[in-house]
Length: 243
Image (cartoon, rainbow, N blue to C red; front, side, top):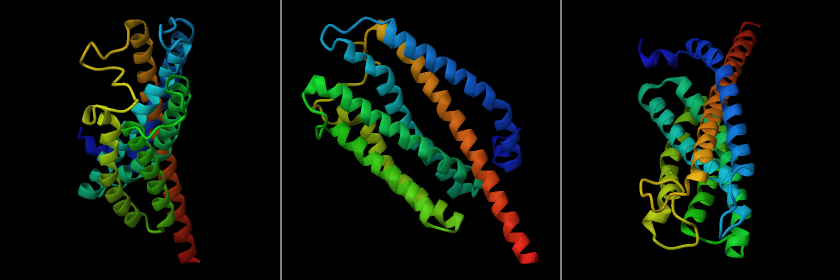
């Protein structure tokens, strides 16, 4: 069985209908367990107090905001190379989920940063690149809505997605590129010195997996909705021609 079989809309819908219940339940349970564990069963930080517990929302949301854009890039490249409509619709479906994750990351970052930095916002490299990524999300969604022909929209948004990937990379590695700014280093890293304590990392991993499964479930759901909407438009256009 080839992976390209799932580029067939009917095959994709059949598969998504089977896996979505598992994804919804798994993501809901993991997010609930991770957040309850993190907010109620972890100690306060010796410097940041209870404010540090925002990490269980902020880090998973920020990670998914960046990964969503990378997923959109891969789906867009598949569209450009293979001309599979499902991949273009999957990229379109992921954008609203990605922008919500970006907003959550920006909002929780501001709430976390205010008592730590004494300000709600700073033109820090990571914060600035994340704000630019948010604007790219807005532009991507607006471009899909502005262009009537779906194939043209998919082509142009693929170009925008490629350009925006630069800022997605900067959002992820800004602290490594510029060793300055207020934002701390990676919460989870191969360098054990940079990692958060085990008391925080374990529930954080659970939250991250839960957010990841939720993102996949949303993309499956929204892609299926886009496929059905396109079918309805095609049927309506055919009926108008026959009339």
